[in-house]
Image (cartoon, rainbow, N blue to C red; front, side):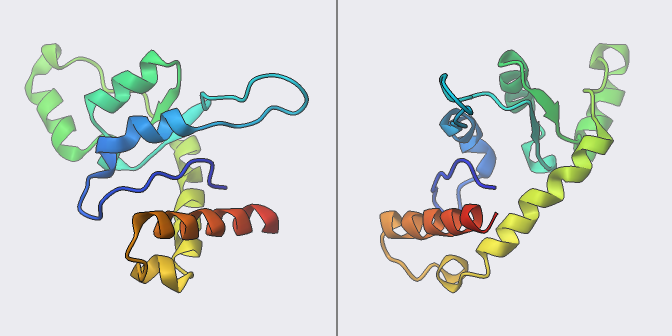
Amino acid sequence: MPIAILLTAGQRNDGAVFTEVIDDIRVPRIGVGRPRTRPDAVIADKAYSNSIIRDYLTGRGIKVVIPQKSNEKASRKNKGAAGGRPPAFDADLYKGRNVVERHFGLAKQWRGIATRYEKLAITYRATAVLCAVVAWLRK
């Protein structure tokens, strides 16, 4: 289920606003207490595999489940012992990433989201939020 929505320009790289999306996460607790702002793990595809994102997540104590790009692996191996160890990767946990992709598929079923008819960003974001609300209500 979607828990944070951030709207960017269509040509903008998702990795550039990754930290802003993570900072927007607020999960209310059952009962009293502040909402959770730190997920247990972040599962992402190879597009998010860079040292900036990995260091940010590790610094916040969040488990990183992102496979390495092939060019990153080759670069590390070319450096030999100076390349360091490969980052930890939990393949079993990574299998759950399809849940995110399925929600994107569900959102694309909404014609207004898939084709971006709205001219204003605020209207488009409102449509995306409405889609998320419907997904939560169906659950």
